[in-house]
Image 1 (cartoon, rainbow, N blue to C red):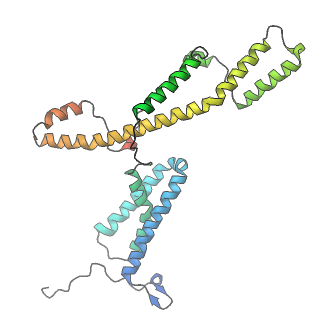
Image 2: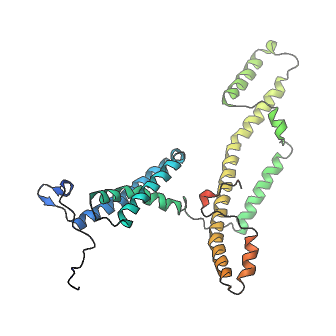
Image 3: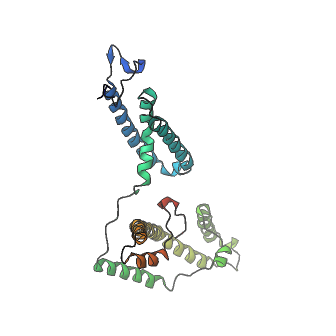
Length: 267
């Protein structure tokens, strides 16, 4: 056009030892596709590693963010500055793999979306069962204040062995037991302690699961609320009929940060 040759959007790579395998030269487009696939595979592998060792990587979140910022800088250099396609750019595609995963992970939930509810029969079953448990325990359990808790001994694993052995020795050696101590009372307490221990783990696990599910559901609801609020806000700015009153009502309660991970307030 106008005597100017059409410019190839993907310039031919310079001959480079990395492009040669024996006597075969890899076509630039194939090499480009290979590195794109490599970036995708790297993202998948990174995802598997981070999921398997999520607790360990939690402490390195700042490092990961720095790494992503570094890749964003490279992105600026290679694309905004419009440098020609070359070997460093292709190596960058490989580095892009973890960045793809980290970005994807920020916008995806770490679990499958919850889509369930209890039927009336299930709700009645749970309520009845919990009421039965509470009724059985109501005359046998106590509620401690924070001050009362601070004044009590705490039964730990090694202390459980101490208690068990002490009661056994006291039973086998009554002459060593002071007269003001009640071995019968201590044995009764220990029996009840073991009975509670047999199901307290189930109760704690169930309570944690229910609390986690409730938190996840709350987050899903708020992820609906945030874009809806933004939509209403934009509509109010454009004077869409009926939007102002809705915006004013929602704005009274709105305090959501842009991203879920920035919401550090204790529920």
